[in-house]
Image (cartoon, rainbow, N blue to C red; front, side):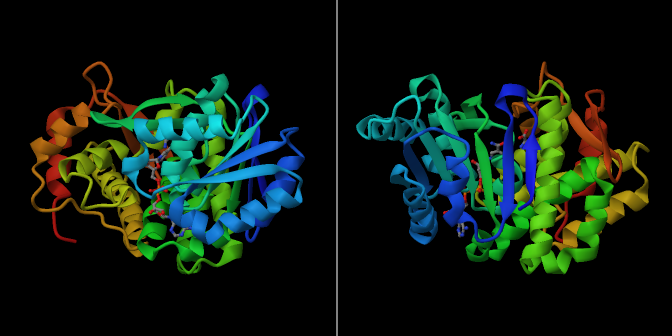
Length: 364
Ligand code: NAD
Ligand code: GLY
């Protein structure tokens, strides 16, 4: 089965991508650990639908395993649930040799990963991401954490998993809107660093969105390999890893000014990528043809490219400056120079950013 290696010295690990492999979780884990005890921390919906397959596989491989559920939703990526899960680990007598499995979307991956990072100063953990967003982004690269009432992801740690197990069959129960929103991260990898991937998406978009397993496995594996390469070269986001934030500075700001209740994260990133490309085009960094090519693909994927009419450019710019990706009072913008290449710029005039935003406001 396709397997990608994240090369991080002693903290290296594999990402396994296939369909129908949840039942093999125990076997795959057995070959990597001497743990006897395993705790699965699962999104409540995902637990109901897929928990038994994972638990059966663990039991068949001889693990003493427990499953504990967290209700679905970003609001549970909290200090309160972080504490409750630690209580669970203590009550199940997990020790330093135990393994934790995160089963669900990015919320569970971030929350459970941070529990693994902190319980007894760190126990091993496995990511089993079940949303496309988490399969191509959140589960890879070891960013774990929870939200603080004053801001998202303010508390956390870089802590790499032992294994990432991606079963594309789980995407069949994911609402189409979430599949599309998650897919923007794959398009993003194409734009920032991978022309062959971008071409492949253009050629196979319908099959991908119809969840054709063969093409999906291939595209997800390539996307993860791209992210793995970036993480291997800049785990702690000193510079190169910032390129993964393409579209996110505009996108996060849009989520903030719309109170996180209008757009899926991936939809906001799609609009953000269009804003960044427009800006790059305006300052003659990006050929117009490449901007149009990106926009066409985003639209074909059923994702938005325009900021809603009620957004004011100055409001969005203010929110961009408040984002934690702004450093030392400067915006660090990831701007494409062509499909497959980006630059990080911290010298763009506010007036250029405001003008690009104003051009991207509209109805379509
Ligand atoms: P999510 O975890 O909230 O999942 C979205 C919804 O999908 C939930 O209601 C869940 O119950 C449901 N779901 C999950 N799998 C399903 C399936 N197979 N079928 C049907 N429904 C399913 O959201 P998400 O988009 O996966 O992740 C968002 C989170 O990821 C945010 O908290 C974000 O901060 C984080 N994130 C982390 C990183 C990172 O590098 N660590 C990167 C990007 C995003
Ligand atoms: N989602 C961006 C990163 O993992 O760095």
